[in-house]
Image 1 (tube, rainbow, N blue to C red):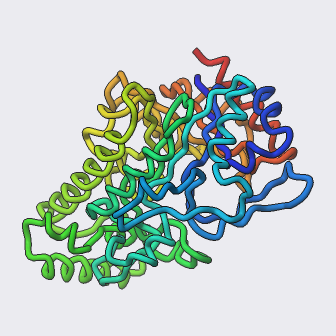
Image 2 (cartoon, rainbow, N blue to C red; image 1 turned 60 degrees about the horizontal axis):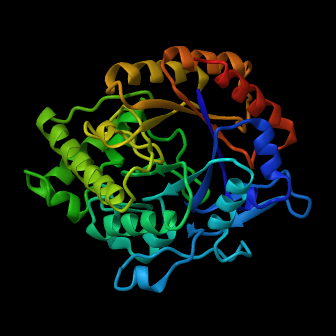
Length: 379
């Protein structure tokens, strides 16, 4: 199995990172070149304990000539000293012989969402999700394409890894999130359907009537008090229309992004088999596997990770590689991470994506080593 380890630019530029990554034996390191807001622990640093990225930022130069005339443009991070920390990190890896991948987060940007509320996902109640740029919006697709082109410009890269290349919804990250466990899965799905004007323009039915029907169904499901409900009572033709609109927008977003990349670059797409999933790994559209070299599925829950890989291997074309995204920094460590990696490989995973080479300090580093070694033993 190929092993990709993830890291932030400041992790890679910290003294000792390159030698640790080389000793770990990962096949490539994915460097975040565009990333959302975060407070990231730095357990390997001798001078500080965390980096506070107050807003989404671009870790390459924001060139005026590239962004001239565009409504949406990324922000620069003042919490890193270097003007081009992304490029510096890639160069450090290349110099020690470690292939570097570009890790690019696309539609997850709260700062732009607050500044431009007309381009974000809007639910059936009319509430906006500022963390979620809507793929139906032309300005969002233009932003994502320019961001991607500028992210990879001038860099020697082994892969381009696309996160949030699709819609975000009701239950993804927000400031001091207080919604966990409140909504049943069916309610969360309905609240994650974008009803903005750009999405509604693709509907075959009256937009106000569709919004009203969604509101009514959300209220009905909430009133039942059943937090485990997974299905709604919407007419099938309405559900199909809403999904078609979402997938067309997602396909258009991905097409714009891929068109901005140089020919021949290896493309890795974070995604999910369930087409209704929103977030960092949004639902795959039918055409997505044909556009990329690898699809990476969420594998942080060992109880379901191997089953997800097996289902993907059966459902997706044989030419696309299946990867599993696992974490070594969860509150509860995987009891036997080597065995879990073995299960993923047997289910059909050809790649292991490891989170996270900067966040996993000395106390969790051995888990990364065990997972990497186990992956390399799989054929």
